[in-house]
Image (cartoon, rainbow, N blue to C red; front, side):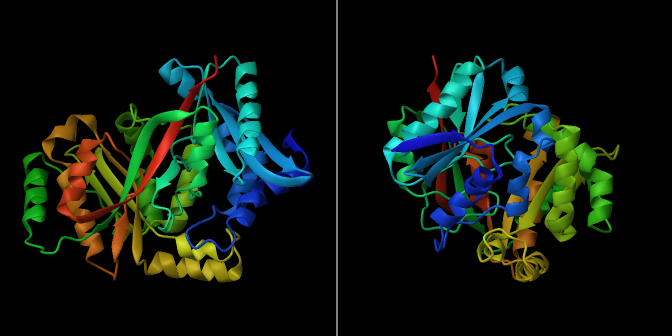
Length: 373
C-alpha cells in the first residue's frame, strides 16, 4: 500500500533529506548537496520564502519511504511572466510508477488548491538551485551545482503525463590544441575599441566588495528572459555572497569595466567540489573540509558558474574577452578541463562560444510541463 504524507514532523523531514542519500549510496556519479544547506529548506525564515510557498511530500510503501517530491509556488516568477505555475523539485523515487503518480498527484492537487493551472520542473526556487532532469550522460560525474538521477526517472515522469518544455546541454571544454594567441588579440582589440579594462581585485573579499552588487544588477538584466530565472532579492544576494566567499579564487574570475568603471561583463568559475563532498554524503566532516580546501586551492576541474554581458555590449564581441580569459584559466595551475553546466539548447550564441575549445557535449537535461486544468 502506498501512502503519501506531507512532511511535517522532525522524523519526516529527516526521511525527506536522507532518502536520496540512501537511494544513490555507492553510485559513483551522484553528488549530494551540502546537507546543512538542504536542512534550511524547512526553516520558517528560509531565504526564498519571502517570494515563494513550498510543500514537501514523502511516499511510503508499508511504512518504508519509497520516494519524495517538493512543490514550489514561485510568486515572483509568476508575476514576471503573468503565469499561474507551480514547480516540482527534489523528486526522487524507486523505480515504481505507482509511487511516482502518487507523489505527483499530491503536488498537482496542492497546485490546484492555490489556483494554478500549470506545473513544470524539475525547477528549484530559482535558477541558481539544481534544475533539469538528466536524460543523457548517466555515466558522467555530476557537478556539485546540478542533480544526478537514474535513467528510469524520465519514464516515470512521462507516464505521469508530462512532456518536454526545454532542454539544456552540458559540455566538457578543454583548451584549444594550439594557442596561436589570435583569441587574445581579438579580446585586446575589443577592449581597446570600446575603452574597456579589467576590474582590479586584491582578494576574494575585495572582489565581492567591489563587484557583487553591480554583478547581481547585471545578471537580473542579462538573464531576464532566460527560462526559469527570477530577480534577486536582498536575501538571496546575501546568501550567494557568503557562498562565493568560500569558493571563489580571483584567478578564476573575469570582470570587464567600461570607461565609467561600470561592470559590463563578468564571468565566474568555481573549483569542482564534486569529489570532495561525495565521500561524506554532503556532510562537512573534518576530512571533507580538507578535501574541499585542496579542491579550491588546486582545482583539476573548473565549473563554469555565471557569465553575463550587458545587453548593449552583446553584439560587440565582448564574449571574446571572457573566452580568452577562460583559455588562460584552463592553461594554468594544472586545470584539466571545465564543465559548462547548463546551457539552453536554443542558446546558439553560447554554443558557438565553445567551438573555440575542444568541447565534448556529454550531458542533456530536460524540464517538463503539464497542464493542471
